[in-house]
Length: 336
Ligand SMILES: [Cu+2]
Figure 1 (cartoon, rainbow, N blue to C red):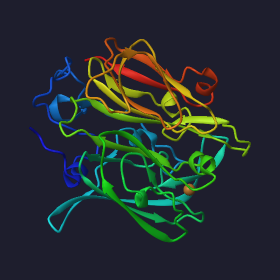
Figure 2: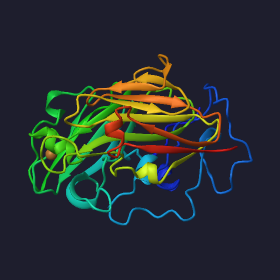
Figure 3: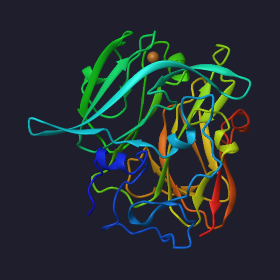
Figure 4: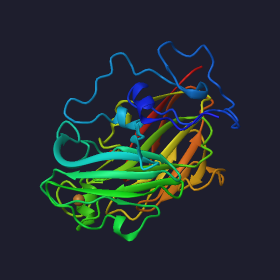
């Protein structure tokens, strides 16, 4: 049985890319990728491979973050031992940063660690988690986690400029939870970018997969309480213009979160395939499969699938008006 990866180990494996759990006791995806996989792919545990980025890939020049890096970046924190207790410690800093939503539209994002969505924090159920929150932004902010914790750790008290607050609690229950600023007006603080995923892995782990996060957000550019643009992982249309390479037959695990303000619900759909659904990440077995799922605000799921045929396939909300305003991406399935 492989153990939960330490932060040090993960950082050594380049950009904290996935890892996850070993294969023992878990059925490997039917599709262990063979040696015919393109040279340069990253081999993860249990035979899971991640395709190399295209040799000509350039991160966005006018953004402090790269959605392609955010996609498979999991922050497992730093492991500390205190008084015989193990603590998984994270540091998160809020700040304002200007970036380009597209070549024509600049936007000042309110970011955690310089990215939208915020870093994906990841722990195992039962871990003691400590999140050190520095607010370097001019506005007051807070971090409110979904999941179980005492009232004083609920993150509804504003943290003023240049102040630091520590949130500490046991990571429970296992599942996929959002965390976000809870300072009023929350619509504004969230739609400016202060949200991310907090993944709590079940003790026994999940089957090996190529794991990635897709967080849906909206941008109210003119403060009219409506979204003019939308995005997966911060930058509108990024994965439309830079398709996500995945391998044929290999299990993909999406952690999908809807943090779109102002719209009452959004759907998520993938082309030419079905996905297994694990609602809120709160089940170890799929509750069924479909190819479109409806998500209210802050709703999130684990979705799993593998593509049987190579080619390019869209994913997007089936509210096409939202898809056409930036919430559009492509998987590029590479043959194995
Ligand atoms: Cu805020």
